[in-house]
Image (cartoon, rainbow, N blue to C red):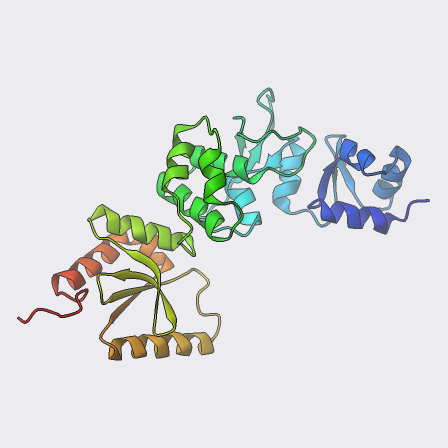
Length: 285
């Protein structure tokens, strides 16, 4: 007789959701599945989908419409940077219709990577494809660059994909692996909008600068969850002080400022450049 814990472990390895056909291929009989359901190791959703206690609410919602999480939901699950969002993004068959989708954004388009209808996981290329089509360009670029930076995918692969999407093709050509987080991508593009060139991830005095403008204007960008401890804060202040003593100007901007007050960021950088703070030898007044 099947030990329900065996099925629970297998289902957890699938992300908490699996199609009954996938379970059968894995060696579980119909009887095994029925036993697992009776013992609470899984529940049936839409008859053919099995959802375990370990499934996230996103995956549970996707299974309820016979789909897979994609776009920002799948990117967030993979640990990529994403803009704040509440909607659950779900990829469904192009022929699916009349689905109850409260709180969900259903994606009917077909991505570049083939995927079985019984698969509970969306390929990363399809995730990026849906992001390109669904999310504002700057945010989409930030997610793509997060994927490159974390080596979830590489530039060579992206460049060879037949995207069948103008937006995805454009992002494939523009994305780089230099941005550690989405706000670095957004900052770089803000600077590009005023004609200011930025070098990313420049090491000075044994410490990385998120961006360097000219020779001496260093930029540090503090993410949403930055400074989990006072010790981290002191470390950063010490590094900033050392760079100032070496002739650098260091400006820090946080997540809220870059994403929601870009005018302030642009104005501050513009003022610093106007004062020549980016130059190695500042001009005299």
